[in-house]
Image (cartoon, rainbow, N blue to C red; front, side, top):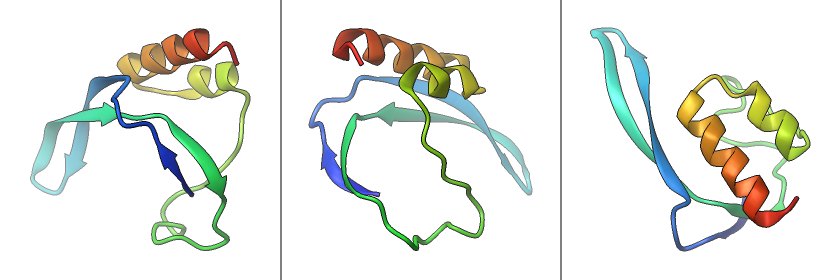
Length: 80
């Protein structure tokens, strides 16, 4: 994806990242992105799938509760 990132974070969430030596806690800042271009190829395409969903359906598919809450709050604020 290419686009215009909003300069201010909508919040943060923490998740457990699996590594060979064990899991570590990672804190992630989340930014809204206005997508201007969808790339045919991207660096992690062999490891990740891309799919488009309506905002509410996308938030329901998220496994991390904190991220789900952030997305739902953003959807309500943006009224999308």
